[in-house]
Image (cartoon, rainbow over all chains, first blue to last red; front, top):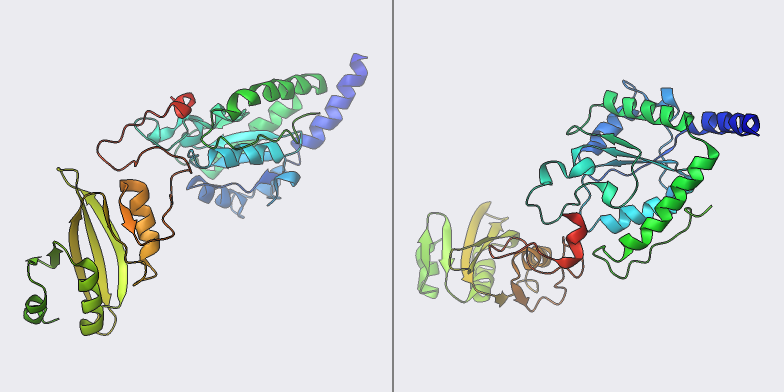
Length: 184
Length: 140
């Protein structure tokens, strides 16, 4: 039994890790560094992540590049929910990791996107260099290659149980959390 | 622009450097400047809160014929007249000032929150603003 699961894991993880398609989601200055990472000098295509998708339905990876404000928080959650499983998140920049320079005395900034969605890789710096984003993608690939089908299911179920807690606390009380793409 | 001619029409006006400080008659002054001196562009509206919680609004006018700038300044408490029916560009600036300072512009039919989320409590750039919304406790 273990041999079969391990073989399936190896094939699935290999294909998932080497074709991470990111969602085009740049909310502020980190987006410029993300564009630079795609350009020819740094060439994210070497790691299979060059296909930036405009639609969350076609994306595997959410690179959250920039500050998330209270007004943007429901949008971020909705985009994450619309992405099909398997999906991964890189919190790019100091603002998304913990509020950054807005962590004290700001009325509008969310102190870290891990208050809203689960984060796989934290990438601080303000903003990170393109090499740092490439390093984050490499680290995410290593993490994906260690995953198992069974533990992935646990991770997803953990997130769905947390969602009910979040939806009453967002600014937009009418926002209805969609469960599409989360339930297996 | 001929200042003396302007002062004959509008009394109770102070001039400080390149700024004309009004006490009333904002709309009449703007229409007069547009018709007689060619100030036909409203570049922007800025706002500053004073120590006595009144808000100073600065209207930056521009004359496209003479290539000259002019600043009209007026102190308001909580509400003032809207310029949106004279200049189309006024509406967005008035929305922003309403959002940040809570000034109600009478006559602007499109007044809404521009930057903050719908249902936000308070106006963040006022000095007495307290960031204590219970719905946002998850973010402390």
